[in-house]
Amino acid sequence: MKTFKEFIKEEKRRLDPKCWKGYRKAGTKLKSGVRVNKCVRVKEEIDRPVLNITEEIEVEGVGRVLAKIDSGNEAYNVLHGTDIAIESGNVSFTTVDEKRVTSPLKGTINIHIGSGVKEERPVVVFNIDLHGKPYTNVPFSIADRSENTEPILIGEPFLKQINALIDTALDS
Image 1 (cartoon, one colour):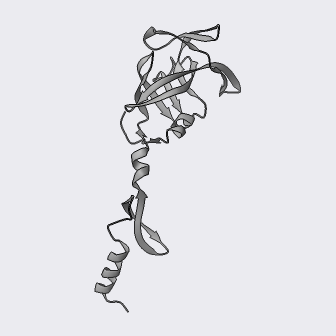
Image 2 (tube, rainbow, N blue to C red; image 1 turned 90 degrees about the vertical axis):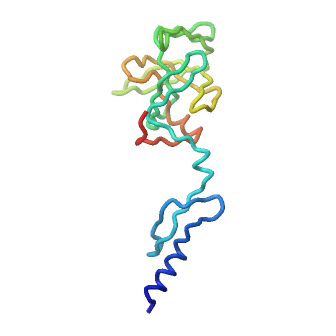
Image 3 (cartoon, rainbow, N blue to C red; image 1 turned 180 degrees about the vertical axis):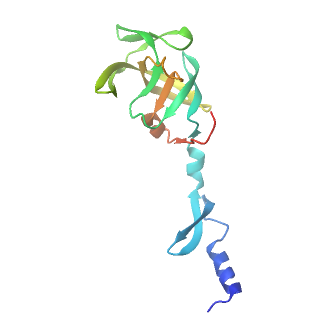
């Protein structure tokens, strides 16, 4: 039978404060009844942006706009737009601060907006800046978001593309 001192010495060995190169200690976990370090890759933490539920983003040609970050939205990002007109391969619409924007039409997308109702929306691309990092040719569907708090919705495909995490505990 081990003495208490031997037990503590063995426990310290199992819970070495260091993790292997490229990893850091993020608490402990039980593995086969033994408490061991939980080591996580440092690279993942550095490379993955952590976003609030709402973020201010810069949209080229539109300006700084408040966006809702929504991992439950499986379609394109959405930019507020009214008075939408499609002509000669371009989409014109009125957006934030009554700014009139014209952009090349990249296609359309059918969105299920609920109760079996579908809505066909034009798709355009914008360059944006999020947390000081530029992203080019980001697709947005255009729709009236005047009933929403944020004029932009950032959806799951873009969040997945940039490998972002959403921290619901962060204040916007």
